[in-house]
Length: 303
Image (cartoon, rainbow, N blue to C red; front, side, top):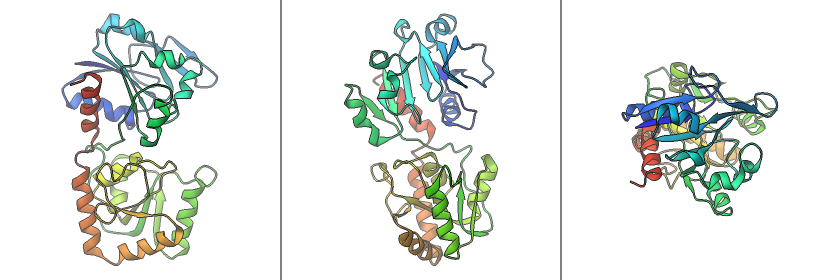
């Protein structure tokens, strides 16, 4: 199968992970989007600044004869999807999670969405929003890529590690949580690293902290599980539906006091910490981007 994928970010992104997943399943991919080495340029850019890059799905189809067009937002748009003989799917991850957003120019609103053969959302809580517009959105959670998220052996240098952005002006809750932990006397490392450095840094912590600004399973939720770390996370929609239970696969907290108590509990039980981390890792083995790619194809093509 030949799949046209449109995404804006680099290879280490949801779009990049899906590209590799499809290729690992034996499919050919054609990638379009700003920043990619693609022979297809956008047919226009809508809006100020970086804007929305528009790609003509019909024009590319006539040259490539692909089997599926997949748009992974944000920042891109496929035009002419009503004029191609193959399905077009969209995966809503970030700024396009709300159906109402698609009513802005240049997207074409509900009529455009009715031409889409597979609407997927990374947020379980947003599925009812699509239903209000008479549209069916399939909940397809984020995942991890074993080539990029894996377990390594390392000396435990820190009580707690948080990999991600924590600028107080953008993520005040994260900044607050990290201050609470430091004020309580825990050794905390925080920063933003990627690829091998990401796995190495997580391995150096006894606890891998996950704090999401959205109440749904985020990328870090699955990535930390794939690294076989003991994850302490905020409560999220979908975690139990996906088979992840507190104290069995992960630890969860909901207040500052609960956070400190959970850290003390986890740090005082090395054996339990290792058991929960292993159980989480085993449960996460069916939550890779390859698994998600298979599910997406099954839904789109009604297999």
